[in-house]
Length: 107
Length: 121
Image 1 (cartoon, chains in turn red, green):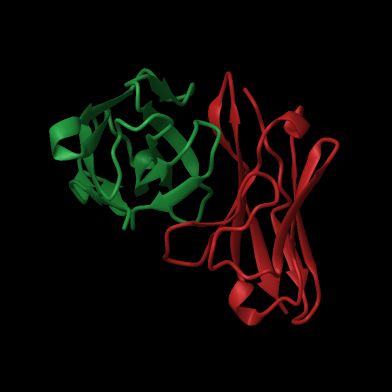
Image 2 (tube, each protein chain N blue to C red):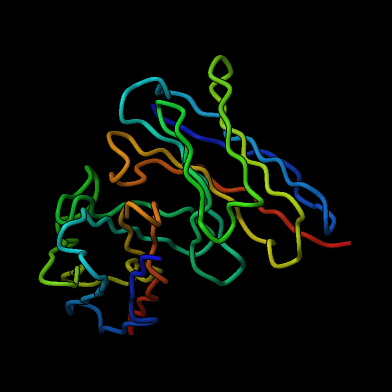
């Protein structure tokens, strides 16, 4: 089965840049999507198709991909960005695949 | 405006079958590329994908749960139904339905608010 690997946690001070990675074999060939989930709420997509942002998502959120790793970058981190973040791809054998999630802590 | 809403029992007993309904509006599941999918999240844990049904009524299941899952659609009612058999306490969690809007490898662009299910005798 296809696996996406995320670090369990990332910590960053306010105003700094957070980078959350998502590793997967052949991820370079798959559109990657990123979701933010605040406590008690449903997930919300913050980046889709590797690097596009839905309307209403701040420009501080960006996505990129290199080799076998996709990265969600959050610039000028704010306290309100503290949440769990998940990456997601479609795989032809495993279908909908989510990473294990990364808890972003704003120090 | 696209919305999805999950409904179903809050409490089920072990060995029972869970039936959840996702009622949606603002889009048609007959539109090419559109899918509705189910996921769940145990308390304090990660999201887990369960099943997907597409515009062509093709169905996809989590390999680890496929023997217990069934997904179906009721087109006139704009509903997608998920059943999970032989429920166990480890199946406790929040169950979400979500839309995939343009192709199967697209993002889940709109989510329901979730339905909490507890499995206990």
